[in-house]
Length: 141
Image 1 (tube, rainbow, N blue to C red):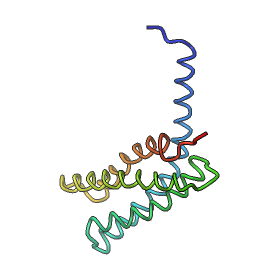
Image 2: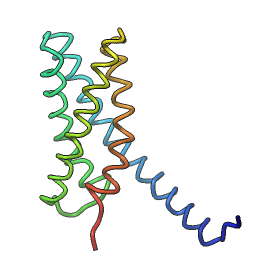
Image 3: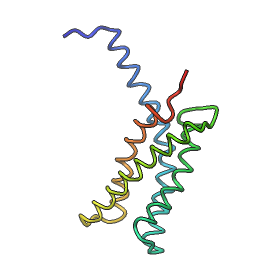
């Protein structure tokens, strides 16, 4: 099968756009993950709040950091739209459920809270990047 230059150029353009987006997404995600990670460990390990509420509270803090950062920096939207807010809420709800079960499963397998949270954040990063680009922050013409 022969791949034309147009198809190869299109593929390279897509890879390049995801690469640039991934770098921007990574920086905001670091802010989100740092706040979520720190607050989770503080609530769960230091204050001894149960897993669900520790996870929920730290997740909500990261949600606020994420919606603002991704709207204005990652996806360079000029307007904070209700549509993006609702879709980001759906994206976060999916990530919340996915992440909670990942952390719970890893804790059940006797991983530390620290390692469980790090693994969960890495998996959810890729989910958020793909979902955010294709749905939540997709620019409409």
